[in-house]
Length: 274
Ligand SMILES: Nc1ncnc2c1ncn2[C@@H]1O[C@H](COP(=O)(O)OP(=O)(O)OP(=O)(O)O)[C@@H](O)[C@H]1O
Image 1 (cartoon, helix red, strand yellow):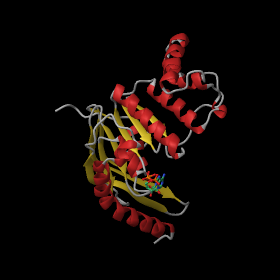
Image 2: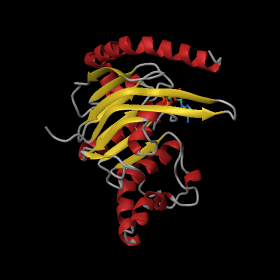
Image 3: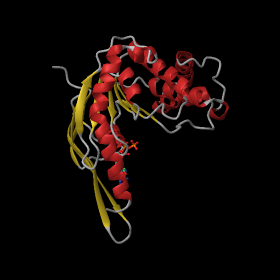
């Protein structure tokens, strides 16, 4: 069997917070075991606050697990995950750089000569539908255009793994579906392992090869795994009318629904300090 791109074993994360007097421990995730194959597109869905971002941040190497291991293409993850590119919900463009200079920032940092980086940057801006926008600064681009620049900025580095945390959730629905289709097009041209975090079950099903459902926290862990056997290439809007999509949605929601309700209840108990 091929070595997985991401191999997560018995992972746990306990946050410790202090208010000056007391130390509070909160185990967000526990017993998380999960593999993602090379080129596989996997989404994690779960109730709000269940620890989806916690898992992603540990896989990115931005957060140290309290327990368990993460292997990247067979190698234990130590420090930052250098084989991964990230796309988060928040804007990460540098406002003082134009679109092209934002796209090539990572290449420049790696020491790629400017002319070579610019040539590649222009190609990437074309791929994401922004040819002619090279000189525009982020504040002169729409939210959707800024996301396209971010996507080019991530993919130009040719990472073997792409980690995405609610990357499109701030966009309006039409722009969001355009971005989802664009991502699928780019992904199918050069398949990378994708770990995609989303609140949106429709988005998870329409994009993924596999959807993992997490339980409500504390100690959140996977409680369901669904293979999405919808044919590719997919159009994320059209695929939603496919009877198989509807059946998968029903099956996954039957597992997720109860956890969502538990998640709301536990969060409100936590807020009240119960
Ligand atoms: N630094 C921290 N200190 C203490 N608790 C934290 C910290 N970061 C996250 N948490 C808690 O850990 C739990 C998991 O958080 P996380 O952001 O990973 O969940 P999520 O599933 O991504 O949330 P959402 O769906 O709302 O984006 C939450 O209950 C959160 O309040």
